[in-house]
Each structure stands twice: as C-alpha cells, then as structure tokens.
Image 1 (tube, helix red, strand yellow):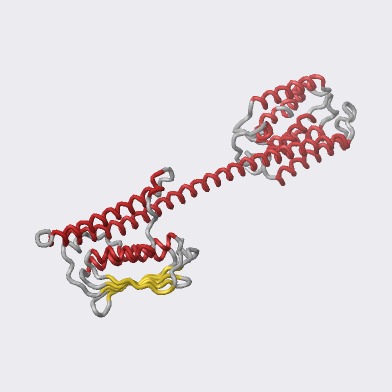
Image 2 (tube, one colour):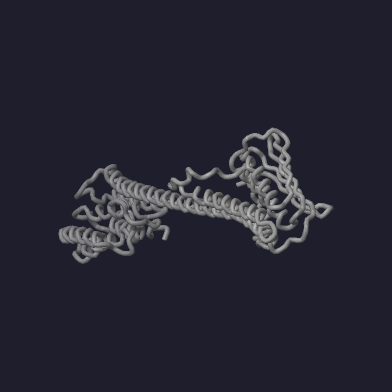
Length: 416
C-alpha cells in the first residue's frame, strides 16, 4: 500500500541501515520489546495521573500498543495515536502527570519518515504530527508538569521525521548501488558469453575455411592421380617406360597434396615445432608448377601473364591459386583432353584471373569419376567474395567453359 505498506523490494541486507529500512511481514521482536517498555512507562504514569484509573490505563494502552505495527503500518499507527492524543487534550480536565504520549509520537513520526514509501504521504504524516504537538501546546498540555518549550517540541518532532527519512534515503541509495553492481555483473557476464559465442563462430568459420582448402587440395590431387594411374594402366603393357613416368607423376602429385594438407592442419597448432620444416602455402608464384603438373597429366594448358607481378597478401595469393587449381580440376574432370588457357593479369589494384577450356571428350570413369562435393564453383565464388572480389563462370558458345575472377590486392575491403 502506498501510505505505509512495504517499500520497494530490498535484496539481502548489506548493512544495518538497509536491514532497518526493510519492512517485514509482521512485528519483529524489537517492536515487542519497545512496545513493552513504552507500555510499562505509560502504566506507571497512569497510576500517578490525577484522573480515573480505568481511563488512565486505557489511554496508556492506546498510546503504547500502536508501536507494535509501526514498521508494518506506520501511517495508520501514527494516525490512531494522534487522534487519541487530540481527543484527550481537548476533553481532559487536567494535563497528564508525565510525558506520555510524547515519546510515542516521536517514535511513530520517525517510523513514518522511515517506512512510508511515498514521499508526499510521508511528509503529510510528519506535518500532521508536528501540527498535533502545536495544537496540544496551545491548549496548555504539558504546561504544568513537563513544561517543554514550544520550539523545542516542534524541533524534536520534525527532527524525528527527518532522521527517519534520511535513513530511508541512505538505504535506497545502498540498494540502488547493489542493483547497479548486479546489472554491471550481468552485463559483464553477457559480454563474456558474447565473446565466447564469437570465438565459437570464429572457430566454425576457420573449420569451414579448412574444409574448403582440403576440398581443393584433395579434389585436384585425386584427379591428377586418377588420370596418371589410368594412363599408366593403359601403357603398362605397351610402353612400360611411359607407364612408369605416369606413375611417378601420380606419386609426386599425391606427395604434394599430403604436404599441403599437413601444412594446413598443423598450422592450427602453435606448439608444433615440425611446422618450421613445412613449405609455405601455395600462391600465384606456384601457378606455373600447377600448370606443368596438369600438362603432365595429359591436359594441354597454356599460361599467359600480363602486367608486373607484385607480392599479394598471403590470403589473397592463396585464394588466386585455389581458383586456378579448382578450375583446372573441373576442366580435366568435365572436359578431358580439351585445351585450357590460363591468363593472369597483374593489375595495380587487383589481379585478374581467367581460365578457359575448350570442349573436350566425355568424362570417363578415370578422369571424371572421382566424385564431387558440389563445392567447386560455389566454393570459388565464396572464397573470392570474402576478399571483396568478383567471379563469373559459365559455358561458352563453342561448348567450352570460362571462369573469370578479380581479386583486389588489398584485403581491407574483405567482407566480414
């Protein structure tokens, strides 16, 4: 309730002030002890009061028992006390013989400042207590016995409410600080989870990149080995020397593929000392070797280069190599025997790549039966797109096939 119910939800108390400002579901032991002490004081004054004893005892109970609910319902408790106080002051034939109920007024006014949630309602309760003390002073209450000064009485009542309100403000500040710390901790945990998720996504992207690299290496190597092995099988009975030559090319292609695969896999292990003996990943500088190996496998390939070759970023260099490698593999697989032309245009801002194969024979189980994962052209397109490049691929009018790629020399334009 807004006029005296429990305040905002407090967490576990962090200090005595916060514990004091936290309203309970019912009276605590401390309220019972305070009420018992005030009741004893009021009964002793009632016995000495110049008025009928039953009335004095009834007023003693009315001015003491409300403190049982000062924390649960501070405003109704204060209102009941002030009401009985005014009635006694207006109707009593003589002033009391002691200080009651002034101590209870101070205590419940303090409770109103501390435990009433809404500020406006709390202020109204404090003003009502102050006004009541002023009224009873004007009616001569306490004048003959205690005789407190008018300003002193007002000071004590206003001071009790102010003390209660300041304690509540401090408790709320402490709770807000604790909530801020909890929010900051939650944000830190969320940031940590996001970082972990980002790391997992990075690992997944790296695995996908490795899978693409392995696809390119294995597809090219298996295709070369299959062609060479098929040629050796055809020649083993008629020309053993040429058959051995093809077998040697197949062995060299398989060995090179193993080196590249080992290089890609072991680069993930920063503690593997064997990495120092591995050759660097291939780039445009090794396209000539790639063309020669393809030519040895029986595919007529011509390499032409224009412009001035300049160093490329390693990732772009590898991407250019893989585009040529995949295109040669596809040409050998789908158009065996067809002539292939590889053009490298070393531009100032980008490197252009064009691989064109003419129409070839029908794929046979040796050259075209090595299987495909469907990652050829899509994989090339994705690889080029990552670096902000473009790739076009499609059939020619004469039955051939052309792949055109353009890779920027700078990797700053790479897509995320």
